[in-house]
Length: 112
Image (cartoon, rainbow, N blue to C red):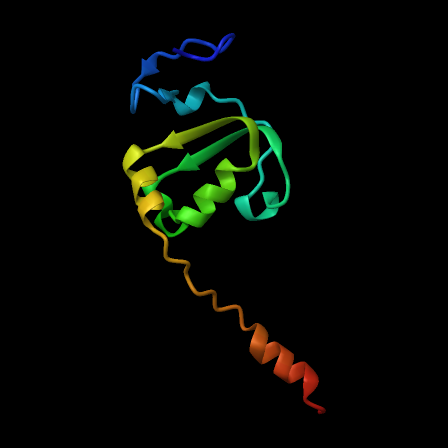
């Protein structure tokens, strides 16, 4: 059930019959270009590999996963734990960012 021309993996486990997921070992992947999801916004790529791991639980957010998946034109590969993917899909809360921007703008606009 792998796409035409794709290598046959050692570990194959369909998540559902209509949309099989091929599980590759991490050492079978070759590094190409790496971008953060944030830096890739507004761009498109032929293929995208997204690591989804519980060890990076703060990044398990639906909006980040959506952005990562929608960067791909033809192929998306989610690498990691299916439970982490489920956590990300269920997590629709956007964390509030504490950048300190307001304080900096006030300091810059206040005459010294």
